[in-house]
Length: 281
Image (tube, rainbow, N blue to C red; front, top):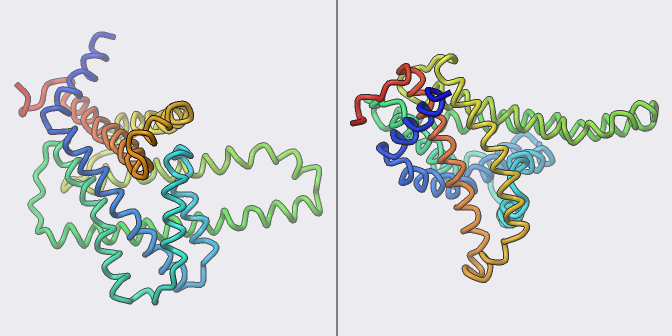
């Protein structure tokens, strides 16, 4: 048991030595500023293939595990942005949206390289192209899942018409299944980030503990932070006025980023056999 807690303590020391708190701010701001360009690109991609409803479903899916007090104001602003008329997929604005939305991926890469004590020697343009590829893959995956979610209510309506007893029995499962799909997507995204963003491929046996910790802690944070805001959100409003929703989002994203980085630090400590890495005294 003592060795177990020692691993967590050593991981925190390494987190601090790797400037973890500064990097969390970088990730939070990068994610927040790249979120709108990513959703603009997602909407343009969906419009190109005639998947307008699926784009709306994908946007909702993206915020499924976020506390309502955090996701609500951002979702409202996103709707205002996405309802503006735009050109096609290959317009100059869409190209910029793709580029800037990859900034969030680059922020995660920097954090993982620090945590795993790796130096990426590839040219910047190659890693940026890789991040852009991940943006395309992420958007495509979201739309694919959104199609299933859009078809879900249709299938439920057909079931209620022809087999109402079965539909009634399955009704309580709709919410958990939707939440489970979102959790599964988060797990896949974490696995892809830890495996492919660093310059050296990481084995599942190495990254498994940190991914499990990140997944559980992130879901717990969403529930806990939502409960906290339900009682004390007024203090943010009284302090930050119209900026309250942005401040709340930044605080939430910083905590998520800290969990993400700490999970990678756990992986590195476990992979080293509980020994302190070379950059620790």
